[in-house]
Image (cartoon, rainbow, N blue to C red; front, side, top):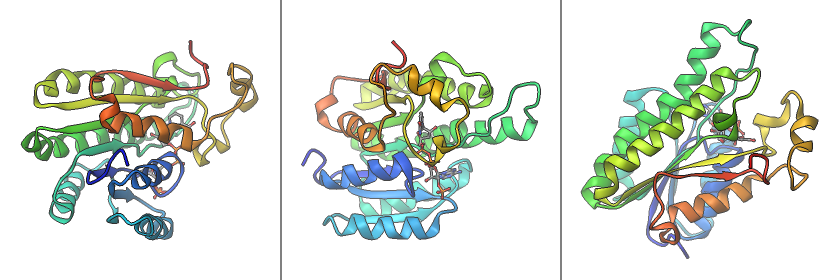
Length: 245
Ligand code: NAP
């Protein structure tokens, strides 16, 4: 029980990696607050699944890209759960296209959902964490944020921005015992990658010769959330089967 008695807030947990992280943290004893946007039924089903593990769990419909919603959400979570020890900024989208054809809407929406959301949630969450003098913030970036990817200039920029943000927060809040780390998955089998262009090319380039699972990412999120990583902050951990070495 690595997270017994802790409270985790995970954005975008109705499916994919966020859902796996929510389940993993609950299995390790954490009380779990999580968000979703459009997948209402899946969100409700997850809340039941988490509660069945014997922890307190609640799903919130909340748009991570909207500053005021993030503030309200964190206030509600703190009121309901009492503490807030772990924040996982997981919510993310893709709207791919070559730059020549990329619209302003494709650019703005990906930056707002992937990058501005991290600012929104982190800014709201550090208040209770500073009071507690304790916290672990985990931001989902991507290997694409490190190496770039043709057709994903918006996504790569958002994920590279997350790495700079993560390091800055680590520098600002280390003295308050708040850690801030990024997690960079490579190719993970979820709805997000289901229709990815050049899927075969991506898989060929992975030394372990397969895509990863959401649970394999969740295992590393658990490590970063727990005291097993108490002396790690400001880092980006790749979970990519060796794709980017
Ligand atoms: P996914 O299966 O598409 O799930 C995305 C989740 O984000 C859903 O729960 C969705 O909620 C939620 N979401 C989207 N927009 C939101 C918003 N504005 N506010 C709140 N929640 C929102 O994606 P995934 O593959 O699990 O990816 C999770 C994270 O890992 C993302 O940040 C992604 O960029 C990153 N990542 C994934 C991979 C990969 O290979 N899959 C690789 C590197 C990085 P609804 O269901 O309600 O829409």
